[in-house]
Length: 307
Image (cartoon, rainbow, N blue to C red):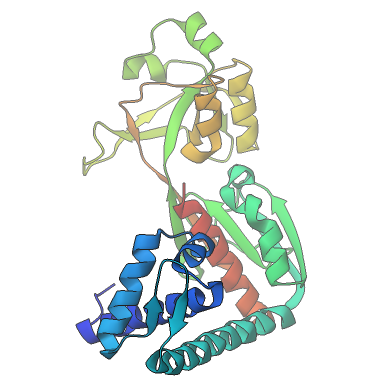
């Protein structure tokens, strides 16, 4: 995003200072306003001084015990209150628009997203859309064709069918993992050849190909064929079997981060950089649900950007 022109930036800074000024007057002191806003007293003082410099007048007579509005300060307070009320009215209007949207939103997602951060925020989503009924189905193996029972389908891999109707929303970074017990039984798994010959747990719907590069900046991705001894239809079963010491598997980082931190799983050949797994989304063309669909897609995307 391009930087705003200087005058726009100055206006944004002034609006922020006006909001802080109004909070200081409401709180009765700089220190009380600082506590309510989660800022330091020196930062509050800096913004007040900046606002007074902007308008060329003293707005508050400040002593150690109290603050007093000057005549110019009273005029500024009215302007600040009007500004804040306009902002609240606008936000309230948007919330009212959200509140009118409802019905059932049927979403199909790959099973790895059952451990995605957005699930922690479902409560806030339901508060935003009080008339929304959210139907989540976790299922693997989709390739871009809309499921008849869904309004939105997220899927991993390469889209097939009509790729123009799908859009990529994230790249999921992945790691090879196994339990410590399996690693102790298998001995050294430091070389690629040893990894390729290990016991692999693999999703049935994915080709038996390991895609990797020697460094994160390598432009070419190498491919190596593996032989899986255990094939499953659910990617999260791969994780479960890895935890039980059955073999190696590949998982998105956010799925196994806690397992690695707690020592339940360990990274295998961490210097090997795997090709990320693209996450795609496709949706039905239903004008009545367009706003909900776009909101939910953005909701998921924002949560994945935080991991």
